[in-house]
Length: 344
Image 1: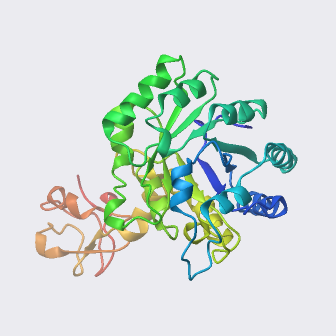
Image 2: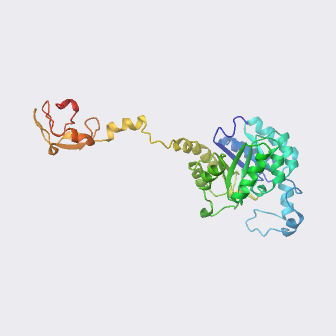
Image 3: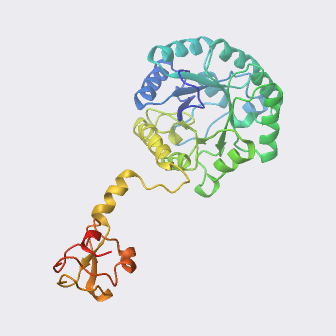
């Protein structure tokens, strides 16, 4: 990784299995993510044997899918969509060539070792494995930064996972607030978990987004998210598991372009009036002006004034220090009154 993931706002285009088992398509998606300005593309590293048991395969022998997003049986889709080891190396090489980070989510110790051999910048732990201490320990021992997704997890489970990683001497952790529903209902997203998790665990917190559209990831930035992980596709109508809830290139570019603006706009808790606003005061605020012609030597009363732009003269909240003074010169109706016009 060209910069530490803790030092910059980081956008991950989560390709997952959206390559549909086609390396050429994978490279097109990687190229598009690079053009959008993403920092990283992330895949999933599993095999037909490392993730799903026979019982689950037997339950899903056929998809009843009128939208044609799926085909055949679960086993057939897994066989087609999983990323072979040699494809990992090919895609990592391509990412290096175009200068975008390559990462993946492993689902077994062997896949962790493959990613370490590829020298990925971090290891992503899927929500489903937050209660898998064997995998957590194996990843933690590699002393790579860890991005830990928290979907479906209680605070106790998150705490246990964090402690498991820390006990192996690894504290390079980013937590991802995540709702593991595709897509979740708005009332279930609970973006306020982002500052809560940061306060509870003291680690940077990002947002793994499964909503449709871009409003939620951008809203997460306003709550202090340091990272956005968003499924990414070239075409939401493409067959496959996650295309429909993925960002297309136009949406992803908006996320990439607007997130840093939100980060900058968050600013500070201190109330600061910037130089630009100080200059604006001179045009937009009001000054004390003569409500009628005032002769030299006139003793000023409250009835002598009005308050109008510009703000270059005596300010309205200073009027108490003006009443009772005499004027040095003739002042005409609607003229801005200055301190130099008064006997002090």
